[in-house]
Amino acid sequence: MPQPSSARLHEFRIVSNDKIADDTYALVIEAPALAAAIKPGQFMNFEVPGNAMSLLRIPLSYARADADAGTVEIWYAVVGEGTERLSQMRPGDTSTVLGPGGHGWSVPEGCSRALLVGGGIGVPPLVPLAEQLHAQGIEFDVCLGAKTATAGVGSSELDALGAHVIEIATDDGTDGYRGFVTDPAAKLLDEKRYDYVATCGPGVMMSKVAEAAAKAGAYCEASLERMMSCGFGACSTCNVETTEGMKGACMCGPVFDASKVVVW
Image (cartoon, helix red, strand yellow):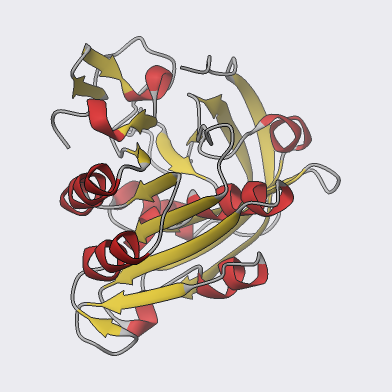
Protein backbone atom coordinates (compact mmCIF):
# COMPACT_ATOMS: atom_id res chain seq x y z
CA MET A 1 0.00 0.00 0.00
CA PRO A 2 1.42 3.43 -0.94
CA GLN A 3 2.50 5.62 1.92
CA PRO A 4 0.43 8.78 2.47
CA SER A 5 1.98 12.17 1.89
CA SER A 6 2.66 14.20 5.00
CA ALA A 7 -0.21 16.64 5.39
CA ARG A 8 0.59 20.21 6.34
CA LEU A 9 -1.41 23.34 7.02
CA HIS A 10 -1.85 25.75 4.11
CA GLU A 11 -3.40 29.19 3.96
CA PHE A 12 -5.68 29.59 0.97
CA ARG A 13 -7.54 32.33 -0.87
CA ILE A 14 -10.79 31.69 -2.71
CA VAL A 15 -10.65 32.35 -6.45
CA SER A 16 -14.24 31.32 -7.19
CA ASN A 17 -17.10 29.43 -5.54
CA ASP A 18 -19.92 28.77 -8.00
CA LYS A 19 -22.96 26.52 -8.12
CA ILE A 20 -22.58 23.86 -10.85
CA ALA A 21 -25.51 21.48 -10.14
CA ASP A 22 -28.32 20.93 -7.64
CA ASP A 23 -26.84 21.80 -4.22
CA THR A 24 -23.33 21.31 -5.67
CA TYR A 25 -20.58 23.91 -5.91
CA ALA A 26 -17.15 24.18 -7.54
CA LEU A 27 -14.69 25.88 -5.22
CA VAL A 28 -11.35 27.05 -6.63
CA ILE A 29 -8.69 27.97 -4.10
CA GLU A 30 -5.23 29.43 -4.48
CA ALA A 31 -2.77 27.33 -2.47
CA PRO A 32 0.42 26.79 -4.51
CA ALA A 33 2.21 24.27 -2.28
CA LEU A 34 -0.94 22.16 -1.95
CA ALA A 35 -1.62 22.28 -5.70
CA ALA A 36 1.90 21.01 -6.37
CA ALA A 37 1.72 18.20 -3.82
CA ILE A 38 -1.75 16.66 -4.02
CA LYS A 39 -2.24 13.38 -5.91
CA PRO A 40 -5.37 11.81 -7.44
CA GLY A 41 -7.60 10.36 -4.71
CA GLN A 42 -6.16 12.32 -1.79
CA PHE A 43 -8.26 14.69 0.31
CA MET A 44 -8.06 17.93 2.31
CA ASN A 45 -9.55 19.13 5.60
CA PHE A 46 -10.98 22.65 5.41
CA GLU A 47 -11.43 25.19 8.18
CA VAL A 48 -14.64 27.08 7.38
CA PRO A 49 -15.05 30.33 9.34
CA GLY A 50 -18.36 31.67 10.58
CA ASN A 51 -19.26 29.46 13.55
CA ALA A 52 -17.08 29.59 16.65
CA MET A 53 -18.87 26.51 18.03
CA SER A 54 -17.80 24.37 15.08
CA LEU A 55 -14.39 22.93 15.89
CA LEU A 56 -14.12 20.26 13.20
CA ARG A 57 -12.68 20.73 9.75
CA ILE A 58 -14.60 19.55 6.67
CA PRO A 59 -12.96 16.74 4.67
CA LEU A 60 -13.28 17.16 0.90
CA SER A 61 -11.77 15.49 -2.14
CA TYR A 62 -10.64 17.44 -5.17
CA ALA A 63 -11.50 17.42 -8.87
CA ARG A 64 -8.57 19.32 -10.39
CA ALA A 65 -5.18 20.68 -9.40
CA ASP A 66 -3.08 23.09 -11.45
CA ALA A 67 0.46 23.26 -10.13
CA ASP A 68 1.40 26.02 -12.61
CA ALA A 69 -1.50 28.26 -11.56
CA GLY A 70 -1.21 27.20 -7.91
CA THR A 71 -4.91 26.34 -7.70
CA VAL A 72 -7.03 23.40 -6.55
CA GLU A 73 -10.67 22.88 -7.60
CA ILE A 74 -13.08 21.12 -5.23
CA TRP A 75 -16.62 20.03 -6.07
CA TYR A 76 -18.75 19.67 -2.96
CA ALA A 77 -22.38 19.15 -2.01
CA VAL A 78 -24.19 21.32 0.53
CA VAL A 79 -25.30 18.70 3.04
CA GLY A 80 -25.07 20.46 6.41
CA GLU A 81 -24.30 23.62 8.29
CA GLY A 82 -20.58 23.50 7.55
CA THR A 83 -20.87 23.12 3.78
CA GLU A 84 -23.64 25.73 3.80
CA ARG A 85 -21.17 28.20 5.33
CA LEU A 86 -18.58 27.12 2.77
CA SER A 87 -21.01 27.85 -0.07
CA GLN A 88 -21.36 31.42 1.23
CA MET A 89 -17.64 32.19 1.06
CA ARG A 90 -16.69 34.58 -1.72
CA PRO A 91 -13.66 35.32 -3.93
CA GLY A 92 -10.91 36.87 -1.84
CA ASP A 93 -11.99 35.17 1.40
CA THR A 94 -9.24 33.28 3.17
CA SER A 95 -8.88 30.38 5.60
CA THR A 96 -6.69 27.30 6.14
CA VAL A 97 -6.70 23.76 4.80
CA LEU A 98 -4.85 20.66 6.00
CA GLY A 99 -3.54 18.48 3.22
CA PRO A 100 -2.87 16.54 1.18
CA GLY A 101 -4.24 13.71 3.30
CA GLY A 102 -4.12 9.93 2.97
CA HIS A 103 -3.19 8.10 -0.20
CA GLY A 104 -5.06 7.93 -3.44
CA TRP A 105 -5.60 5.64 -6.41
CA SER A 106 -3.07 2.94 -7.28
CA VAL A 107 -3.38 2.01 -10.95
CA PRO A 108 -1.86 -1.47 -11.34
CA GLU A 109 1.17 -1.91 -13.54
CA GLY A 110 0.34 -3.18 -16.99
CA CYS A 111 -3.20 -1.77 -16.89
CA SER A 112 -4.55 -1.30 -20.41
CA ARG A 113 -8.23 -0.52 -19.73
CA ALA A 114 -10.03 0.89 -16.69
CA LEU A 115 -13.62 1.47 -15.64
CA LEU A 116 -14.52 4.44 -13.44
CA VAL A 117 -17.87 4.34 -11.58
CA GLY A 118 -19.09 7.37 -9.65
CA GLY A 119 -22.30 8.21 -7.87
CA GLY A 120 -23.43 11.68 -6.83
CA ILE A 121 -20.68 13.71 -5.21
CA GLY A 122 -18.44 10.64 -5.47
CA VAL A 123 -17.61 11.70 -9.03
CA PRO A 124 -14.96 14.41 -8.30
CA PRO A 125 -12.14 12.06 -7.15
CA LEU A 126 -12.47 10.17 -10.44
CA VAL A 127 -11.66 13.25 -12.55
CA PRO A 128 -7.96 13.57 -11.59
CA LEU A 129 -7.69 9.79 -11.91
CA ALA A 130 -9.02 10.05 -15.46
CA GLU A 131 -6.45 12.77 -16.14
CA GLN A 132 -3.72 10.41 -14.91
CA LEU A 133 -5.02 7.53 -17.04
CA HIS A 134 -5.14 9.79 -20.08
CA ALA A 135 -1.55 10.91 -19.47
CA GLN A 136 -0.46 7.26 -19.20
CA GLY A 137 -2.24 6.28 -22.41
CA ILE A 138 -4.67 3.95 -20.61
CA GLU A 139 -8.12 3.55 -22.18
CA PHE A 140 -11.00 4.12 -19.78
CA ASP A 141 -14.78 4.01 -19.68
CA VAL A 142 -17.04 5.83 -17.23
CA CYS A 143 -20.38 5.20 -15.51
CA LEU A 144 -21.93 8.16 -13.65
CA GLY A 145 -25.02 8.11 -11.44
CA ALA A 146 -27.17 10.95 -10.09
CA LYS A 147 -30.65 11.49 -8.68
CA THR A 148 -31.72 13.59 -11.66
CA ALA A 149 -30.20 15.28 -14.71
CA THR A 150 -29.68 18.63 -12.96
CA ALA A 151 -27.73 16.94 -10.16
CA GLY A 152 -25.14 15.25 -12.36
CA VAL A 153 -21.54 16.45 -12.61
CA GLY A 154 -18.40 15.40 -14.41
CA SER A 155 -19.56 14.04 -17.76
CA SER A 156 -18.18 16.90 -19.89
CA GLU A 157 -14.87 16.93 -18.02
CA LEU A 158 -14.43 13.17 -18.37
CA ASP A 159 -15.38 13.31 -22.04
CA ALA A 160 -12.73 15.99 -22.60
CA LEU A 161 -10.17 13.72 -20.92
CA GLY A 162 -10.84 11.00 -23.48
CA ALA A 163 -13.35 8.61 -21.94
CA HIS A 164 -14.23 6.05 -24.64
CA VAL A 165 -17.67 5.30 -23.20
CA ILE A 166 -19.73 7.40 -20.79
CA GLU A 167 -22.85 5.78 -19.39
CA ILE A 168 -25.22 8.00 -17.41
CA ALA A 169 -27.84 6.70 -14.98
CA THR A 170 -30.41 8.78 -13.12
CA ASP A 171 -32.97 7.70 -10.55
CA ASP A 172 -35.80 9.43 -12.42
CA GLY A 173 -34.65 8.73 -15.99
CA THR A 174 -34.17 12.39 -16.90
CA ASP A 175 -30.73 11.56 -18.30
CA GLY A 176 -29.51 8.25 -19.66
CA TYR A 177 -30.52 4.97 -18.08
CA ARG A 178 -33.35 5.03 -15.56
CA GLY A 179 -32.14 3.22 -12.47
CA PHE A 180 -28.95 2.56 -10.55
CA VAL A 181 -25.54 3.21 -12.07
CA THR A 182 -24.49 -0.27 -10.96
CA ASP A 183 -26.57 -1.74 -13.81
CA PRO A 184 -24.67 -0.18 -16.75
CA ALA A 185 -21.42 -0.78 -14.85
CA ALA A 186 -22.20 -4.50 -14.50
CA LYS A 187 -23.12 -4.63 -18.19
CA LEU A 188 -19.79 -3.12 -19.24
CA LEU A 189 -17.94 -5.51 -16.95
CA ASP A 190 -19.74 -8.40 -18.68
CA GLU A 191 -18.98 -7.10 -22.17
CA LYS A 192 -15.37 -5.91 -21.85
CA ARG A 193 -12.19 -6.91 -20.08
CA TYR A 194 -10.97 -4.36 -17.54
CA ASP A 195 -7.71 -4.54 -15.61
CA TYR A 196 -8.78 -1.92 -13.09
CA VAL A 197 -12.02 -0.57 -11.64
CA ALA A 198 -12.21 2.60 -9.51
CA THR A 199 -15.38 3.63 -7.72
CA CYS A 200 -16.57 6.38 -5.39
CA GLY A 201 -20.07 7.12 -4.15
CA PRO A 202 -22.65 5.64 -1.76
CA GLY A 203 -21.51 2.55 0.11
CA VAL A 204 -24.22 0.30 -1.32
CA MET A 205 -23.26 1.35 -4.83
CA MET A 206 -19.55 0.72 -4.27
CA SER A 207 -20.16 -2.71 -2.73
CA LYS A 208 -22.13 -3.79 -5.81
CA VAL A 209 -19.45 -2.42 -8.13
CA ALA A 210 -16.82 -4.31 -6.14
CA GLU A 211 -18.83 -7.55 -6.44
CA ALA A 212 -19.21 -7.12 -10.20
CA ALA A 213 -15.51 -6.33 -10.58
CA ALA A 214 -14.51 -9.40 -8.57
CA LYS A 215 -16.79 -11.57 -10.70
CA ALA A 216 -15.14 -10.14 -13.83
CA GLY A 217 -11.64 -10.69 -12.40
CA ALA A 218 -10.76 -6.99 -12.30
CA TYR A 219 -8.82 -5.33 -9.48
CA CYS A 220 -11.09 -2.78 -7.81
CA GLU A 221 -10.37 0.20 -5.58
CA ALA A 222 -12.97 2.24 -3.71
CA SER A 223 -12.74 5.71 -2.19
CA LEU A 224 -14.69 5.61 1.07
CA GLU A 225 -16.42 8.52 2.72
CA ARG A 226 -15.91 8.85 6.47
CA MET A 227 -15.89 11.77 8.91
CA MET A 228 -12.15 12.41 8.94
CA SER A 229 -12.31 14.83 11.85
CA CYS A 230 -8.61 15.42 12.47
CA GLY A 231 -7.16 14.30 9.15
CA PHE A 232 -3.97 12.79 10.57
CA GLY A 233 -4.95 9.62 12.46
CA ALA A 234 -5.42 10.89 15.99
CA CYS A 235 -9.18 10.79 16.58
CA SER A 236 -10.27 7.36 15.21
CA THR A 237 -13.59 8.73 13.91
CA CYS A 238 -12.95 7.54 10.34
CA ASN A 239 -12.28 3.85 10.95
CA VAL A 240 -13.07 1.38 8.19
CA GLU A 241 -13.53 -2.31 9.00
CA THR A 242 -11.34 -4.35 6.68
CA THR A 243 -10.20 -7.97 6.46
CA GLU A 244 -6.94 -6.74 8.02
CA GLY A 245 -8.67 -5.05 10.98
CA MET A 246 -9.78 -1.47 11.55
CA LYS A 247 -8.07 1.10 9.34
CA GLY A 248 -8.31 4.87 9.54
CA ALA A 249 -9.56 6.34 6.27
CA CYS A 250 -7.51 9.50 6.73
CA MET A 251 -4.20 7.61 6.80
CA CYS A 252 -4.83 4.20 5.19
CA GLY A 253 -7.43 5.55 2.77
CA PRO A 254 -9.59 7.13 1.61
CA VAL A 255 -8.85 4.73 -1.26
CA PHE A 256 -8.95 1.05 -0.29
CA ASP A 257 -8.56 -2.27 -2.05
CA ALA A 258 -12.29 -3.03 -2.40
CA SER A 259 -11.79 -6.75 -1.80
CA LYS A 260 -10.58 -5.97 1.73
CA VAL A 261 -13.48 -3.75 2.80
CA VAL A 262 -15.86 -5.51 5.21
CA VAL A 263 -18.27 -2.70 6.11
CA TRP A 264 -19.11 -0.13 3.46
